[in-house]
Amino acid sequence: MKPALSVLFALLLSLLASAPAYAAQLLAGVAKVDITDRAAGPVNDPSYVKALVLKDGATTVVLVTVDAVAIGGIGRIGNDYLGKVRAELQRELGIPPASVLVNASHCHSVVRRDTDALTVQAVKEAAKNLVPVRTGAGRGREDRIMENRRLKLKDGSELDLRRAYATPRDEDVASVGPVDAEIGLLRLDRTDGRPFALVYNFACHPIHGVPAGGNTADFPGFASKVIEENFGEGVMAFFVQGCAGDINPSLYKATQHPHDAEAYGNLLGLSALRAARGIKTGEASPLRVVRETVSLPRAADYEQRIAAIESEQARLLKSFRGTSLNFKAFLPLFLQQKLSPDFPAYPNYGYLHEKAQGRDALAKLDAENRANVEAYLRNIQAMERLTHLQVNVALLKRHHAEAIAAGTPTLDVEMSGLRVGEFVMVTFPGELTVELGLAVKKRAPGKFSFVAGYTNGYLFYLPTEAQRKNPGYAQEDCDCLVAPEWRKIFDERTDAVLKRLNQ
Image (cartoon, rainbow, N blue to C red; front, side, top):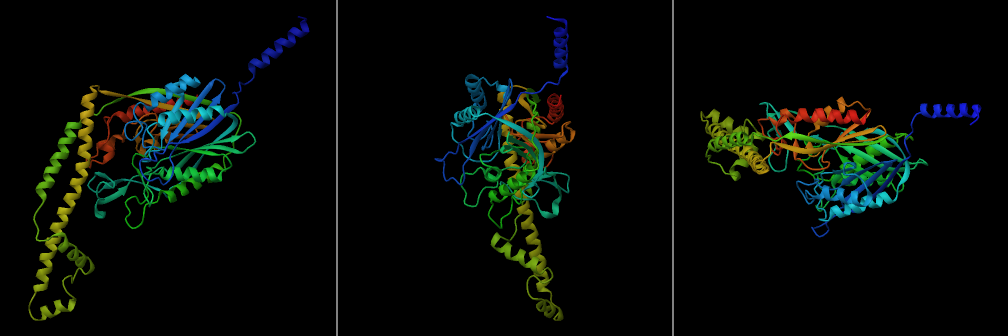
């Protein structure tokens, strides 16, 4: 080689070595398959499994969203679902198991028993139709459709709002817990700028239902429909459930009007759309996925907690006292005393007449009736508390038996992390309460960092340490497999995953 050419060649090598490394073009494919079990009863709206396949050079990631209550643990999807899906995708498409993330919306629809095969079908269809995409991250806000179902009582305990038992008395409630109004967004556009897909992360239990009843994907299904019909031709929306462990739909206990998840889904979908339209997409999109196995301590205090509840049940049973009233007699007396506290038994002139004649029969009747009404109310309150305790002691007994059968002091679960450009999401199985997600997002180093529960398995409820020790025995505290100190491990490993994703 001539000296001049040799110098030029060396200069070119030097420039190439010092140039920044650019990621390969990000490719994406989407597909969905109907998984509704139409033989299980009336269907209001369909349930889907949706697949988003992302490929960047040698890296392939699959995000699957399922309109189902959980990935194993409870509901129609069995504990072998995730392993079967991953094994098939690895065999047919060469996708590593760690690169497959599956999130359940937690809606209570009834899905087909072959949902595993239908999931593989959706992923294969998505992988066949990869197109170049640009990505952008953002956030929206929706605070009208949810409420924290844990109520802080004046005695320092907490109770939760469920249809399985009564709401506490208004005069006993001190405050309510927080909600997370943030909508985490990942927008994918075709290279010509047309919207291609929208991933949206939000925290709320999809348990509102529809007025006519029937199988439903609940508000996530309606929200995704709004997005897909209004964002652009061929757009697919992917709802990823957040930290919804203690978040109910708004007005969940209302009895004055039918429950209608469609209205809530419309609000969420429009709020997500509004924010998504403002996201600018770009070329450079680092694609990363990480997976870690996290060992959590099993709860070891089941016997003590069961004994404490049973002691409280015994106390409440002993508190019942006989009254001269039945419900038919109680209700009109109660209403009379509320409508006219000073003259419940008769118009006031009757009291004035008796007083003028030196008599007080109506006043004495009122005193007797008030005592009977108060005694009847105490019995009702004891009954309501007993129903609450009955539900939750049954959960503790079931999990205690399961822990004994397992024979191990720890639970090994899967934590995953996904990064697509600026969009960062850490996932965990089970029903994380909202305070956990808010705390992670506050600590997270990235600009757009989000948290998903109900992913790659199901670990029942995951409350904070304070909630886990709550003397009121909310369901999140009892339908729980882990010891209170699980939170420290969760925080440490979550921070480590986020650090890896942001390197």
